[in-house]
Image 1 (cartoon, rainbow, N blue to C red):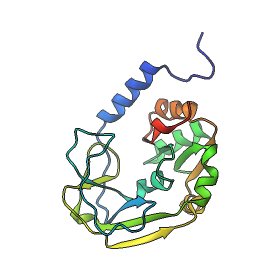
Image 2: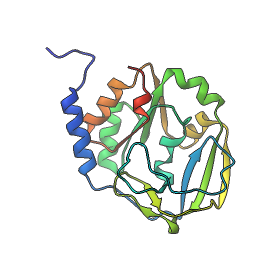
Image 3: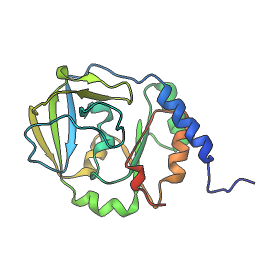
Length: 198
């Protein structure tokens, strides 16, 4: 009999992630792309090799506005998100996650105070200098040094989510909700899961 606290097995989880990674990613043509950091002193961005993707050539990584809410968190904060692109997905999102929002983001309850205290810096770039990265929805990369066109300080991350009509959830552990997101068949994103509570 399956444990009521487990939605899917490790093998099922791996297969769902494999399938999601094989799905063509959605990219528009934004005018501006963003990079978020707790360091507000960066004047130039040098291509780096991503620790989570060491085989990829060094790049400067950015995100479009539609997918930016997953980065409105302190750097080391584990977080997950699920969202809808169209009416059919919105209906499924509303039914499965009991929400009227088109995006749900979640993190652990221990991150409430750090989120309240955090100051993020939103570095803005002309998207024409970047190319879409096929590996994830809304991500754009460039393999050369770039300088931001503008830097904006974000000092109220909770209100930032609320103003964007993103449903922000806090839960003691992310495992069950992460499994629900994976099993939903909807677009999803996970960041810093290796830092999540076990």
